[in-house]
Image (cartoon, rainbow, N blue to C red; front, side, top):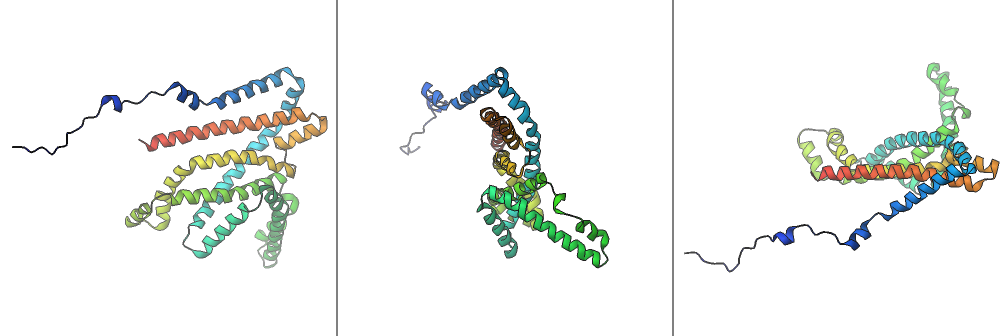
Length: 295
């Protein structure tokens, strides 16, 4: 004889488990209308360049600086990645000196405007560093190490071009921002991962290299991509050092022809095109990463 518990089992209703179709209003609200705005801007830009000679001439002149803009950004971001990774690891280091030095670097850089940092690093820090190298080279030569000292002593202020100084300034500046991204990514990995790796006999460095960092970098890739897009835009600031990127070339064109509307319209369109393409690539990467993580 069975006893009833008074609770009847319920079966899932196929009508409630089926996905609800979106209403027309929801589809209208979720539609990316901004893409239409970008499309209209693209058509307008194409019309200006193809129908008005002044805009076509401005484009032909300004596009010369695209190569400098791209190479400056790529070199600076590559160096910034290394600086950011080292500083990010320093921020979570157990060594008090290393941790405080990394924190000092991050807080100093983040507390000063990028334009001021570009001026300071390019026109003050780099020349002062060269002076230190020259002094060290002279000393090494005096103690009989001329094969090392003479090349250092021969370094002068003119040996470092403004393009190189701009790359150094951007990389040092963005290294602080990337350091915080790496720090957050590493700390997002559960402590159990490190404990499990150490229990398998790995050293701290091995566990960080083979277990923690691969997962952390995967998590922060979208943020790194967003910072790369931001650096493309901030690279326009190196024009203050007379680096012939597209911003500097546009300024030269406007100053020579007094066609300010044409010069700065083309400049804005070029930056918009580069950042939109990069932003789309970052979104595709982010969707693929999220899709893989759900598998």
